[in-house]
Length: 152
Image (cartoon, rainbow, N blue to C red):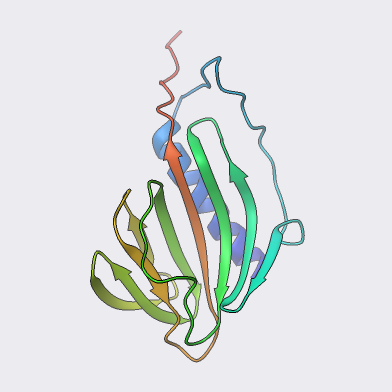
């Protein structure tokens, strides 16, 4: 989990952030979050009836408000919560296990390597319908509209 987990989470954060902030710099009103590297041992672990959530980072970045970078491990037959909706955009990538995606009332199988993107206010969720833990990476945020960097 460590090497593949860190790689997948890093790749997701990098590609998503790069797509929205290429060449951007923080407006003066934004206090920039410094770059960092963290380990699973440093992640905040919370245990629930459905499984565990490892939160690596939460809060604002240059271009995101209310961001969350985390890994969830769902026990067989469980879900974190029923399909839900929120203002944040969200990517979820299944790393291990199998389950069922729910997106705007439609369901389809979920397996390792699959990705779901949920736009703001779309109903979405995932249930572990397999016999082993389902581990997924999640990154969600609200955009701040960081302007592109001025050309010199």
